Length: 375
Length: 80
Image 1 (cartoon, rainbow over the protein chains, first blue to last red):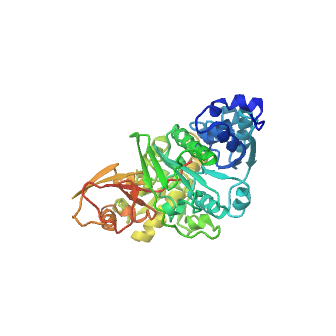
Image 2: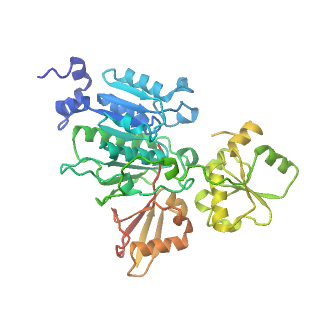
Image 3: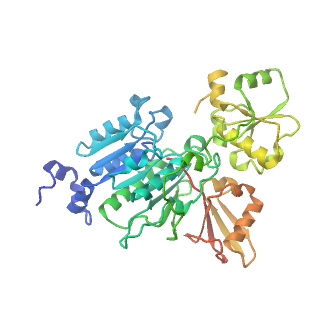
């Protein structure tokens, strides 16, 4: 027996040692490998816990956020006592307590085109658990440029997607990447985030565990990873599908770009706005105007201002419900989606009577009605 | 012929349902189907990155559809 493993390691990883196909060889590969996890949120929680428990030698965590109460419904790394603390620091402590034999490093920064390549350097694999499109494309492109596989997972309400991108194949070629699937991002505000659209708390537990499983398979060379395939899961109907992704190369990736701009999030044309104070006074005075709420139905149940609901996906279809002969105020949670909606309606339908409620529900809760739920 | 269309993610909101049976002419391609959906559901025009799979395989736009094909509309999702 080699002395690569200590007695303690042999005890800890006993079930892996006895697992056919895995064994000492699989464990050795895990111990000698490194994984960079982007985002320690819903997906990152199970992902980090299982990678550390399994004995991946070195784990990096890119996370700049703090623990918020609304995280605890699904981000099982954190507890009440961690509220307000740095997620990355809490995660590092938690993983070291779980398995002191693995090395854990925290990068307390927002991943950017400037820092991505230097952070990725030295890692064998990246696992993407971020929560926004610009970072998804950045992680993908940086993996392609660095020659690192990207174990990808993403969630939405009751649904999850998992795939393994940019995997080095036996013939020396690389498997498809995120851009082979989705060459262009959706326009801003079109696809709700978890904060906007909601997410079933256990869903990232399921999907992030699948992501951990794929990462371990890639690192150990066991089984058939989801290379060239996209796994889709719908918890609501309990259905799943695996879709084949063609090998045809996606757009060439030669450098990192401005991903905020690529995803349409760069400073865009200003729209007419109204502040919550002014809006409040207008209401008090009984001014005749129409209020449109451009959030998802679920959000209305949490907090509302009594507007007519038109979710972002239905705006074009519902343009004829919007008045042209009086002032119209559009609002959402933060004012971002409603600004997008004003822009869309002005461009496509020529409206000139639309105003965005600056700061949305959040500003209303802060400045007018503290009893309104912030979410 | 009749096609079964399965919607994922935000495509479900646009269709207003998860599954749709759609009657189309016999020589319909993926591109024709896209145009038809766009006509009925203009919001699809904004979803530039919608992936379309025919019988669990990503499909090029010129693929001719067959009776009983299952079409999946898969938009990107970003949650984590």
